Image (cartoon, rainbow, N blue to C red; front, side):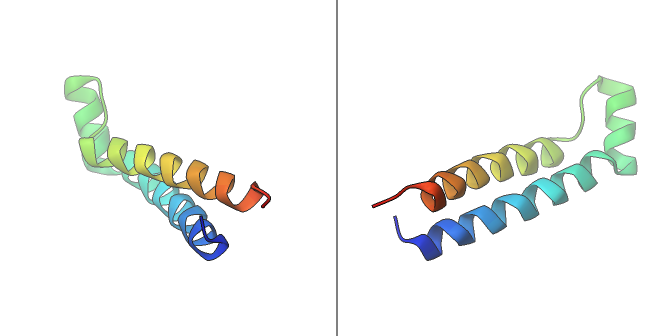
Length: 65
């Protein structure tokens, strides 16, 4: 994988995780947690997508040719 794509994936992953944590702490997520016991789907998908993109990007950056 190209180093540029790996760096981009790493940055996007970090941004998605930050956005997911923000969504997790939002008022709608807290209401959802109070009623159902779980946060909103948006928060979960942002966190999962961010972690996956970050890990793929990190492996691409650290991999040597």
